[in-house]
Length: 98
Image 1: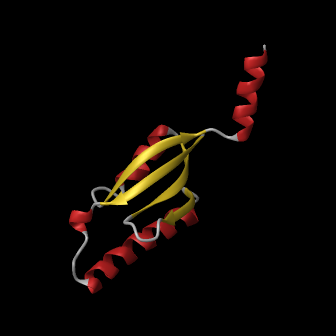
Image 2: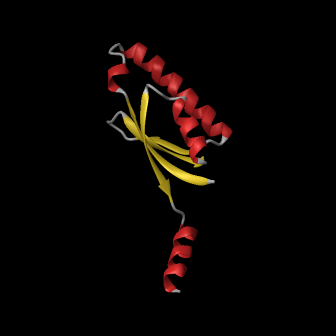
């Protein structure tokens, strides 16, 4: 199972101008994120203050990540970056020393 850093950004063309409508939509997103955290899909999640973007740390296979992203489409766009652990870096260093 891999670990991935997902950098996400709202599709600004889908953000309502009316603040009550915007709050309703953002609340739905927050509830979805909370459900995914409760299920263990999301290990960490945050927003970048002053931006319409943030990050999530997710574990799973490539297929798990693709399926995960689809539930947020088309309202959120993602950049996905695989993450190597310290243990993996140490294994790479050992291999380099041979």
